[in-house]
Length: 407
Image (cartoon, rainbow, N blue to C red; front, side):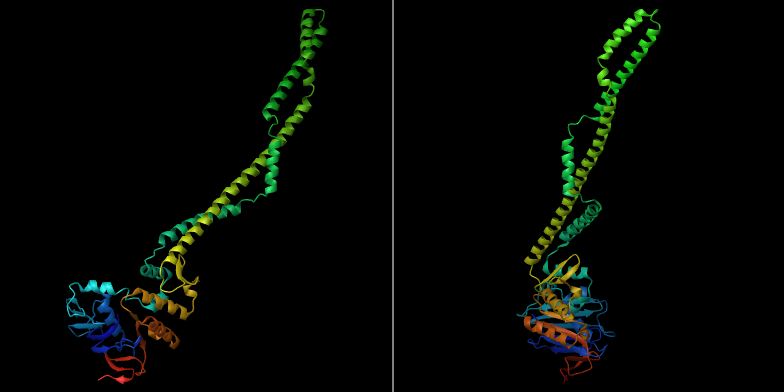
């Protein structure tokens, strides 16, 4: 569905224009000097078809009380009338009957009419993504948020992994072997108790000897005590042999302390190795999860029909063949923007470009070729003083078309 006829009177700077458009003409140039009424002509299309959201507070030409736009869309007649009380819409179908709900008809045939291909290239990345979501219906926000959260968690874990020493497997194995070899050694408590008992017994033995010496000096008066001491001494002689090896016991305790210190180092080595393995494993799991999210996004993107093959987006922005949009050449950006504009209006094959002066001849050629390939009608407004080019507007009226004066 294209525009084959346009009438507009008293809209912004337009006085009265009436224009028939060749249905097979894909590139419609609207030219003229600045402030001549070119924008008002394209705005007329916007106001008539785009709905109230595209109509300014004062659409009527200054000094006039009424404005009207009539557009013929392949036999469907759209009439938008403006007065000081508001705007009124009427649509007549091909058999001559009026639609009871004309706005519903426009909502059905008009997609994102206000989308300007050149505007897309000037949008910030988030708005570009929003446009693609609107067109494709595919919203990856939830997946992007999930990936962002996991990536942040992985970042913290990655810092922790880098801060931890990486213990060589050979050292870990040596530590395990050392622990195994020394697991049955007596404990420090056991050795200490043995040493304490031996010390106590030695003290008893020494005191017994002292008693004997004392009793021997007093033998005459202490025969009975001497006898008792001798008996006791005989009893204590049975433990004299283990008592004599105190130095060896102390050496054993010192050796056990050394081994314990080595065991603690070995156990800490294994513990650190296990901790590193756990944290590094979690980091790897999160990395795999991020890859899974990316794969799911790729799958969803592959299932969606894009305006142009190779187009996609992620949390960073829109890309084409994995190249960020802002790094593409001007020609590639224009092709992509045109493809998106066409995808936004699948029924009404009309695109409006209001900054056509920014397009050089090569860019205009790209626009025209794409329009011909897809059979679209592209309206381009451009500042131009050469009256031989396009629909030339002067002082709110059309004065010539492709150099031919309009009566």
